[in-house]
Image 1 (tube, rainbow, N blue to C red):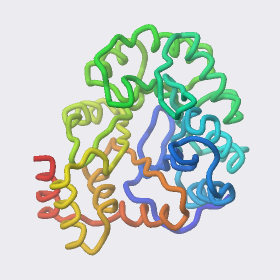
Image 2: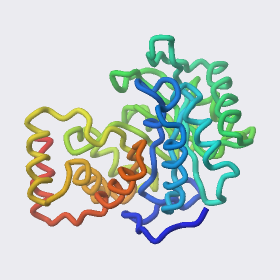
Image 3: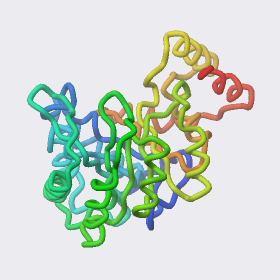
Image 4: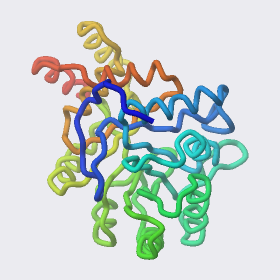
Length: 290
């Protein structure tokens, strides 16, 4: 695969020991409805993954629970043997039930099985980055994380995991995790309307730790959505483009993992994230959270 001339916005960030593009790709949407089962168009799913790499993206986010197994297997089919500069992040800490739910699974033996499943489905001997998913489907929960993280730290010591991160975590849990093992990234819900992690982002940036927001348009009230739409209309673009561009401007340690199942939409997201925002645009956008 060869890199095309389309520029990726945001430049790069050193994630652990690897330089990655700040504009990455989140593979969750490649699964079927409800993130269950195979994609409607198998070939289109493979094409998006290959296009992402061809465009120069070097950070792909996935999870064995997407499908389950389906998305990891698509990543393997599309890209294995993996390019030397490709960095694949995955997640553990949960499973899927027959109804498509996301029950937690963070006992040490459960985590070891999930790591083994990720190694198998991705076709690798070592996982680049594993995020421990905390909380539940409603968001972070203040709960102990030591036993789960220590189990993953042991696997890291054994050499099957290169780097660790946490996801869906409170700021206190992030600090606790950092006392147990080096953490290279935090993956939480954050966007123009959901700003609870502002202080955490700034602290992590100073420490050289990546922050990977998910749901760039999630949690908006109708009034907030209306305000974002108005800014996007004035700039002649889409709300998603504005949201992605704002995230890249917010802090240099923010890495995007915008997801899509369409090659055309992938290119639109890249172009949108490169949108130039003026000072007055940023002032208006920063007011959306109230």
